[in-house]
Length: 119
Image (tube, rainbow, N blue to C red; front, side):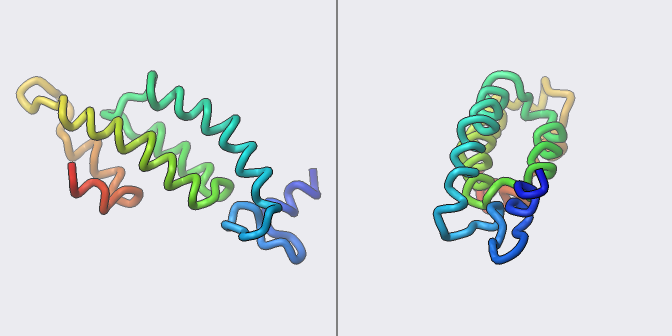
């Protein structure tokens, strides 16, 4: 356990697998994260997550930010979260919804500021 913690945190000469290391040592962690965590996350975002309640997913992403490489964080945001937000914006009806659009879009600004401009 101590060795894996050291590797993840960049102990010794290793820069840390979560820090976008350019060497092949980061690849096994990336594969593991994609095939386990991201697979389940994709299922959750696609079928269970309600975009009008962003806190749950934002909390998850914040907790995993130190482990997910930036490329994986970007993939989750651009290919899982953003498409669901697009659909939610298209379906949002201000006359029927009790939740104002800014209440569930603004929390995503730190993560998707440029991409949210198109919505």
